[in-house]
Length: 275
Image 1 (cartoon, rainbow, N blue to C red):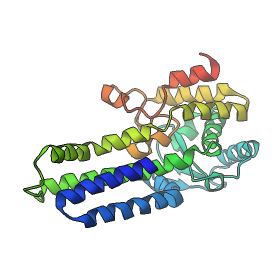
Image 2: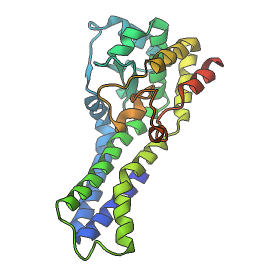
Image 3: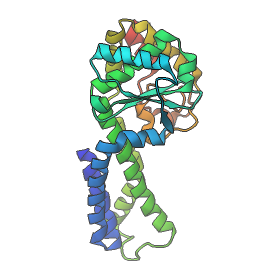
Image 4: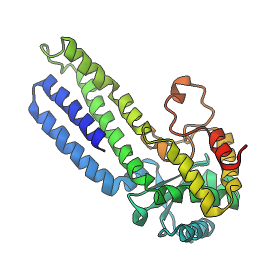
């Protein structure tokens, strides 16, 4: 959060100097503080909106509720809210600033494709993220990555609309600043990926301890990865939240592989059952 705050302030400083208006810097600082606070308190709701997830009741899906309730009791966690995403691609994620405000979202594809032990493994993985405090920083990053992209987009659009300043768009420092603004979404993504992939391995291991059956999660990961097709509605900002890459595990783009948000499924399965 501190790195993002400093990064946004630097962006605001450059843009305010470029346009000769200190007010832009003040707005950037206030806005970044507001977004940090907003991401902390409302990040889970924002993520659910972005994912087009809707909260469901126990009457709609009693089986899922029973599984979540049983594993929550085993993990010593309060019952989280449960959301459903209408998507045939099997996937799931957890969010929430702490264990008392946790939430789990699963896709209709995951619910239909996996059997009971496999679904139990996925739910245990997501509850482990909540228990291990992974969901807070992951949720905050979603909002802040979006903020950086908005600032960069505003600046770039203003150039195309002819709002550049004749005396401020020349010189090495101006060129460096302009390039940094253009690259800021990529820089923000790199910061996002700094959330260690080992958190996924830790959640897998924690799930195995909760279910006492690592084969269930391993089998679920195999089925999820073999599906291969991307989710219909997915955002770069939320991709790292899901249990598996929501853009599809069989991407042929080398550039995309450089920005993978998850460890390879094969490595995770090997860590679980040694295959």
